[in-house]
Length: 86
Image (cartoon, rainbow, N blue to C red; front, top):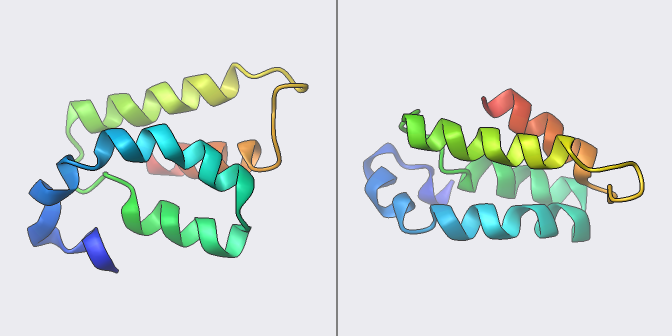
């Protein structure tokens, strides 16, 4: 579970921006069986602060704004995971 240790939540803050910059590409290029664990165990959502919720909401809004032509293989999957996280 790596970074999912509650005592490491301060350490996670340093990776939050990178997580949101890379998660969409990761989900679109890798298998469901791998990305579900990456999403669940690396998502910076252990504090439920307004900033964390805002990041997930911004990602949700971005994914929902895609046209059908812009959506990739993992877009709907990631959108559902993000909705569950909020």
